[in-house]
Image (cartoon, rainbow, N blue to C red; front, side, top):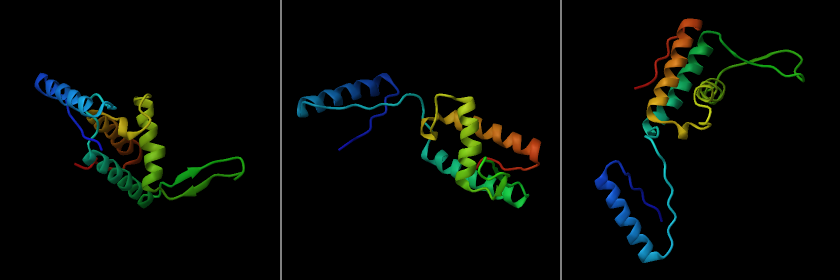
Length: 136
């Protein structure tokens, strides 16, 4: 059984300490897990996926296919973009370049999601003529 306790003030901090003491006194064993900063929201997570799908659609509609290269293929292979390929090859590439310690979107803070989306949006607009705004 788990519960969540957000601490963002002295009052909520005291409430957390009281609850932690109660849990320990009643059970004799408690494991705490925490995150710091303001992690991306579930709405932002949904928006990342929608954004990636919209980019895939825009690229495919404009004739910008994804290129796969390998020694075994002997030549480039062109395939349509998908939501997951955009997330892996575009979103995650920018994310790790800008925030090397954040390998997963679950580790992003709220403001970082917007920063990554802005970089991608600007690049697609300036270099490919594609306008794909981040969903709001």
